[in-house]
Image (cartoon, rainbow, N blue to C red; front, side, top):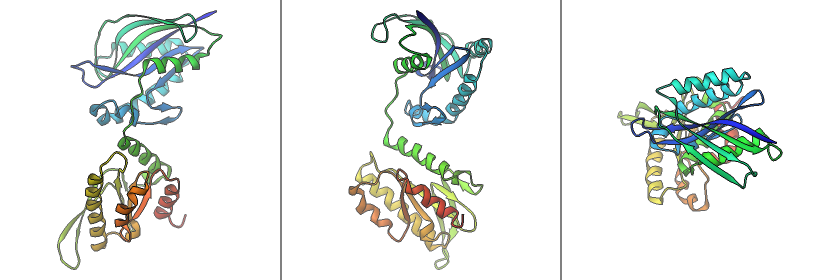
Length: 303
């Protein structure tokens, strides 16, 4: 018995004028519900760095990708085929965001090892996202819908390599969310500058932090990506951050134990340069599970 599954392949087009797309997701309707697989999505977890790795434009548009992920999750709850088709039809009619770009057929007749592909591509409207249509046939004794979706995603969506910087950004976001410090009203999740006056020298000093928890007992954070960076680059960043934390203590804005350096995967070769933060800041490796506890204790010492 052969099962025919109709699916839609979603593309990301960063530049609507160039209309060069990258496959990022697969949609299908089967068994009374919608199904999807999407770049960086694993159940309820989203790893944004997969999408951000596509291009500079994608990295700047990750907020929009998050919204698309939520849209697909909502679509996955659709039970009526008419609703699913209406959603796809809206994508087909859309001239910005999600549009249908081309159609094709993929047939499988002898399991996963023997495939034939026929494509009849007709370029249509292109913008941030586009969709391709097709049909997959495979013996259902070999697989269920989940296997079929996984296979389609593997064949049609190329997962890009994640750079050390993007991996660090993903893990940092995860740590800040899991500690719940990201949800504190006084927390700034983006670079912030604080103007202070040095008491002894009566000079204006600008304090720079990558993140800040303001309030009566503020916590200043700065980040340092170690993997993939040259020693010269690391040394330059360390000098800048050390100065920032020293100025924060000198002006009385922060105590040294409330200056936090967030770095990633500390190796033996990094020990010497990180020793410069001794007595100046707390050094925390975001990939170390103990960092979650340390941040919570720092933010809420009596909880």
